[in-house]
Amino acid sequence: MFRKTLLAAAAAVTFSMVSVSAYAANIVDTAVKAGQFNTLVAALSAAGLADTLKGAGPFTVFAPTDEAFKKLPPGTVENLLKPENKAQLVRILTYHVVSGKTMSADLAGKKLDVKTIEGGMLTVDATMGGVSVNNAKIVSADVGADNGVIHVVDSVMLPK
Image 1 (spheres, rainbow, N blue to C red):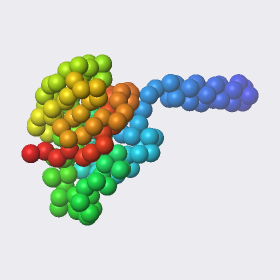
Image 2 (cartoon, one colour; image 1 turned 90 degrees about the vertical axis):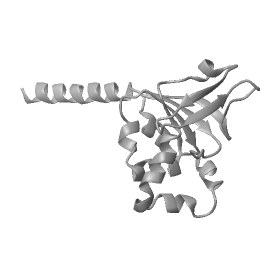
Image 3 (tube, rainbow, N blue to C red; image 1 turned 180 degrees about the vertical axis):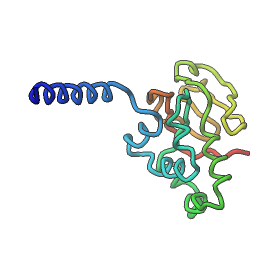
């Protein structure tokens, strides 16, 4: 009896491990695994947005790399991460997020304005052989997540 129970428990653990690994990661977990979004992930946590981007979505995120954040004036990131600047940080981060899942094929050959979660507009231009979003270039597109897609950008975009 003990042996059957032990075998059943081992089978259940094995099955649950297989089931979990069969799913893709959400946007935040995908960003963490990529290793080039440490600043973005820290900012999402400080702004209280990490759980939102782990949610159902779908979301399209124009994700600045750590290098993109380094282009900001010295001290900017540290200042934004302070609790008293949370509203400004939320505004900047949500300016990088669009509701829905938009793949690069959906943008090819088009120039369009898209509304961000922040409420502002981004101009996406895919008419000149690459894709730009406002002042940022998409350097890697269509990084899939189970609740949306990440497009990697080379600059942090600031709302007006």
